[in-house]
Length: 363
Image (cartoon, rainbow, N blue to C red):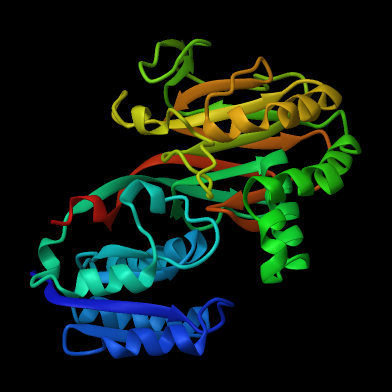
C-alpha cells in the first residue's frame, strides 16, 4: 500500500514554544503537499493520527522536543498497528527542549529546514536514518504491567530525580536572560547541587534492586571506547545481582539525553551484537562519594568519555528492573519525561524502529 507524496505537520497548541507566530510560519507552507494539524489533547492527537494513517501521508513532521516526537510516534504506531497500516517516516524540526535525536540527523532551526524540505519534489524519497527503540512496560505494586511504549532512552533512580529537578529549575528560571544558567550543563549543575544531592542523601539506604535478565548480558571492558571489548557474564536470570544500593539504572539505544549530553556513548555499537542490544548503565557506590565525584568530572561525563568504578557498563537485550526493600518512591523517566514512580520496569530491545529524515544526506 503506497504512501502519498504529502507531509503532515502536528503542532501542539499547549506547548509553550508553539506560539501564534510559529503557527503562522507553518500555515504559510500549507498546501496540497503539506497539511497542518493542531492538537490540544491526547484525544485530539489520536483522531489526528487516525486521519494521517488513513490518508497515507509519507512523512509526519514533529515540532518540538523529544517528548513531542515520541508521543506522536507512539500514537501513530498504535493507530497503524490496530489497522495494520504502514507507518510514515518522521521529520524532526528542532523547536523545544532536550532534542536527544536532533544531533544524529542534524535537525536544526525549523524555519530554514522547513523551507529546505519543501523544495523536495518527492517526500517519499527523502533520505532516512532508522533508530531501534526500547519496548518499555512498567508497574507499581499491585498493578498490572502497562501497555508497551517505545522510546530510545529511559531510566529510574538518580538520573530521573536529577531530570525532574532540572526541569523544575528551568521552569523557575525561564526568562530569556536566565536561560544561560538554567539550561544545559549549567542548569544540571545547579539542580544537582541545590536539590538532587540532598534528596539522594536522605534515600533509604536499605533499598535494593534486582536486575533480572531474560536475554544475554555483556559487560563492557573498563578501557572500552569505540572498539568495544565485551565478555559474556550471564545468559540466564540475575537475581539481586547488586547487593548494595543502586542509585540509578539507565538504558538507551541512542547516545544522547539531550543538549548533546552523551549519556550512552556505546549505544550505537550495541545494535550490532547478538541480534541487537541496548546500553545499560548501573550507578552504585556510597552516595556521599558518588555525587561529588560525578560533579567534579561533569565535563567528561557530559562528553561520554568519563569512566568510573561507580558506573557499571553493559549491553543487554531484555531486562526487568525491580525495586524492593523500601516503601520509598523511585522516580522514573522515559524519553526525558517524568512518569512518577514504578517498582518494576521491563526494557526490551524492540524490532520497532523510528525512521527519521536525515538532513545530512539531503543534496
